Amino acid sequence: MPVQAKFTQGSTLKHVVIMSATGAFGLMFMFLVDLVDMWFLSMLGKKEAVAAVGFASTILLFTISISIAVSIASTALISRAVGAGDMALARRRSVNCLVYGIVLSSTLVWLIHPKIPHLLLYIGASSRALDLSIEYLQILILGMPAVMVAMIGSGIMRAIGDAKRAMYATLIGGGVNAFLDPILIFGFGLEVQGAAIASLIARISMVGVTYYCVIHLYKMLAQFDLLDFYHDVKAISLITIPAVLTNLFSPLASFIVMEHAADFGDDVVAAIAIIGRIVPVVFGGVFALTGAVGPILGQNYGAQSFDRMQATLTSAVQYSFVYCLFMCSVLYVGQGWLTDTFNTTKETAELIHFFSTFTSFSFFFQSLLFIALATFNNLGKPYVGTLLNFGRATLGTWPLIALFSWFFGAEGILFGQALGAVIFGCFGFYMARKYISQLEKTETSIQPSLKK
Image (cartoon, rainbow, N blue to C red; front, side):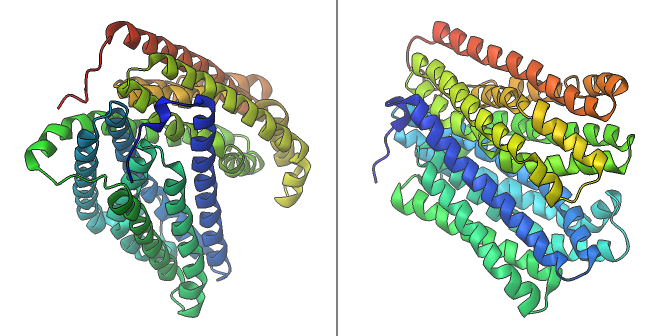
């Protein structure tokens, strides 16, 4: 199937909506499968089994963040080549990103696997939960190369504009996981080990789906050449390393919020935890923006279509505003159902009501920051995005929630967090606009930076 730079023509709003919707659907399905996974384990009646997965997930989050970062680098570099019409370079970068990811992930497995008991002890696992965590993680960590390969494959698909097939890999992987969970956990009596094996097989199935499309459908992998790989390693690393740091700063902000919530008691901690589980489902379309906007910007940067790059940012803001307005309205109307469903105490319910009524729309401003991160990741300044996200996680979180919680109590935690999103979202988006204008002034002709 011939590859065309589809994002360099047509409605930018349509491209943003399709890319965001498919990405959001895939993300929300993954969260749903994780929830089902935990539900099956909870049916065992052993709380230590659920705790074991929780401890293991903390370490797995780090490995997944690395896979996401390499996928971001792949999308950025390949989409620019596609936009410039240089398919030979796009194919070369596809195979080099793949080899880079396999080498990196295999090295991490080699380093982490023998240290799993020590890592789990360090983060607080103990007794029976420690033993189960070790069993679970020793199996699942072996799937890190598969996750890496699947995510890079998804990044290649997004770079060439095929968001639907990139989504199919996520859906099929999640479906395989959900299908195998009850068979292995209950049917074979493997319990936690069964959940790990189901997830491992699901990750391998994702590889098969993505690479059927990448290799057979689009023929996007060139023959590997060691000298070309050596040339591309620096370009891949310059995006991957800042992207890893960017991904790791978000858990830092969550840790700061939870630490302050603990000062107000278990009811407030429960409210923050519930809100943390509501947010990915309700605002999945916002979290998908970074992966949606990046390939569109990358292709148009390769084609030197700066007016379409500015139009893409405008379209992303329009999409996000409408999406957030609708989902916040749904959240406002359904807040009573949420508190009843989670059987909350009065104090927990009050904080959920406050979030649903007053601070949930701050995710629109959070989306502005995501748009900015996509801009800098895909246009050659990934470290700027890293600094922005670090600023939001620290200066945009700790001082504000400390100040407002001192004045307004637990509600001040949510208000301070929301205000930080407003400040850094607006500032980041302004910087992104300004950066594209600067690029337009300095780059008047096609320069495959992309330069071989």
